[in-house]
Every structure is written in structure tokens, then in C-alpha cells.
Image (cartoon, rainbow, N blue to C red; front, side):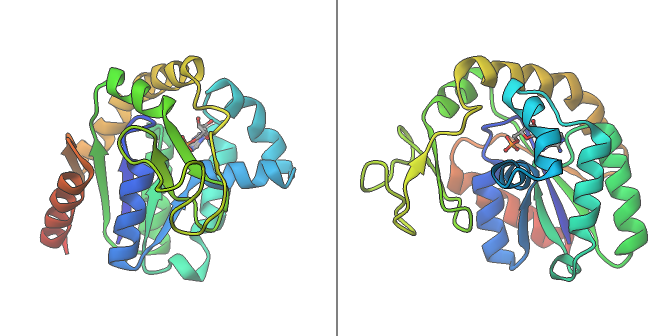
Length: 218
Ligand code: AMP
């Protein structure tokens, strides 16, 4: 099963995606994480993505599609994956659907939308901290999910860092970009009857709600 997590930045796609990934034994693939890793390794792909990311803009579809198709062709995701931050445009969604239908015809495709008001998101992202250890990547929030020890990851003990693009100005820009693309994107998944929307009030409620839905989709 391939699960496409949809929603504005800060709606919990990463946190919820990682919980589902552990429960369902599916790889969690975040296009944002892949780009950040490419940037820190200063690869050609990273160089292409960096300027867009700093400004809160989307990396062009052709660059993003090439990257995700290569990743989804690997064996460790042959039985499915949780896609976090991909697709973000209708063009990407359509290309992904066609690619998976051809390459993994026996696997189902489901889209989950997390719907959270913008003012809640802005507040949430201002307090977001991420584990600097890339193989952990745990996500915290100073208000709602603080680490036990200040600045230190509960899980692996690495330093917690604030992402470059988690400042209010860039967050607002990312929200504008999300809303510019979201209607067409959601319409695509509504159109093929694979969209399930939740308005998560808290993490546990969202996870349980989604799991119930996924049980019925197997
Ligand atoms: P995220 O970690 O999902 O919030 O993504 C951080 C940034 O990476 C976004 O603001 C974009 O610049 C870029 N990015 C991630 N996923 C995509 C995508 N599917 N299409 C285009 N750009 C993306």
C-alpha cells in the first residue's frame, strides 16, 4: 500500500507518517528530508533544490518527480511506502499515480489529508524542533510535545535543531504556496475516490482515525 500524506506544512504529516510507518512496517519517505540531505551533501540535486526551499517555494516538478521515481524504484519500497510531502501539486499526483499503477500494479494507493487551520500551523511551526540525527528525525514541539531534556532528542540523544524554513515569514509563504496548489491536488484524489480527510485535534485521535480507515481499505 502507498499512502500519500497531504496537508499544509505543520499539519503533522511527518509525525503521523512516522507512526504509521512503524505500525504498518512501511518505509517513511519525506521529499523534504531527501532534499535536505542532498543539500547538506552538496549534490547536484541539492544545489538545484536549495534556493527554492530557502524561499519557501516548491522545487520544480521535473526535478522532484525524477528524484521520487528513482527512490520508488528501489526494492525496499516495493510493497508500499508512506509518502510525506509528496505529492504537492496535481501534476505530481497524476505522475505518481501513473508511475505506481504501471510499476506496482498490485499495490493500492490512498491519500490522507490532514486539515488544520493556518493560525494553528504558524504557532506550531514556530515551536518545532527536529532531531539533527537524520536516521532518527524525531519531531518535537516546545508547547505540545517538548523533549524531556531541553534541546536533546528523547530517542537517540542527538541535538535538536530548528529548520531554516521554520521561521514565521517562510512558514506564511509556504502556506500560500500550499493553498495555491491544494485545491487541484485534492480534487485529483477526490476524483479517483482515494481521498480520506481528517481534522486532527490531537495526535492520538488522528492516528486512530486514520488506522481505522486504513483497516477498511485493505
Ligand atoms: P517539507 O519538509 O515537506 O516541509 O518540505 C520542505 C521544502 O522542500 C518545501 O518547502 C519545498 O521547497 C521542498 N519540497 C518538499 N517536497 C516537495 C515536493 N513534493 N514538490 C516540490 N518541492 C518540495
